[in-house]
Length: 210
Ligand code: SF4
Image (tube, rainbow, N blue to C red; front, side, top):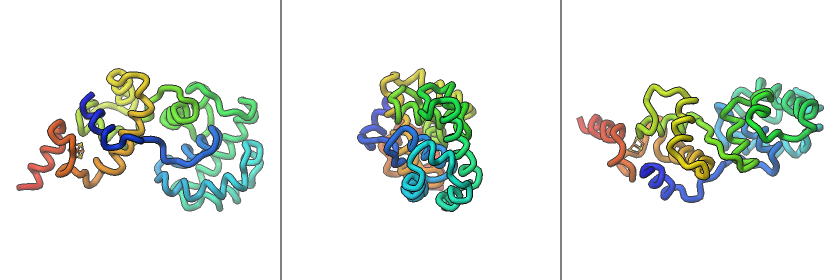
């Protein structure tokens, strides 16, 4: 797809921006990143993982201390409960290992389809497309997906239009394009290499000239 190809040229090294050293750390970081920035998560996780480096340690961690370590991240109280419960469920149901299927991952506290897809793709190399706010906005602005498509429909459309071996890369490319270029409030339409493909951008520029 031409639009994705041009985005890929802009962000050739697109990859996840959350810091982690293991599938377990990635899972926890992705849970913490819901409705929060990756930067805020990356600031908090070194102290969290240093204090609780294993699934066992996090499962046994005092909730107040987890809260203290992640309190700079949005929704921290709920997330503290979720990551502790998640570690406990990994021990109880999955022998302390992060499961490698979506069906199992979404059983974990704080893990929805989007989080599961990020973990599948980034921790295990399983083809998946996680649709976050950036992916949804960019694909709709470019009419890759219908404007009224649900998150599930956006994911299904991308899976249909993008070759499977590019799903994980495409997810990261769309996120970086949305995070740094086609931003929610001030998309950089005037310097956008995709402007000729983008009715939304053309309409914005026309409206700005009035
Ligand atoms: Fe986004 Fe504007 Fe580029 Fe369209 S032209 S993709 S709205 S930055």
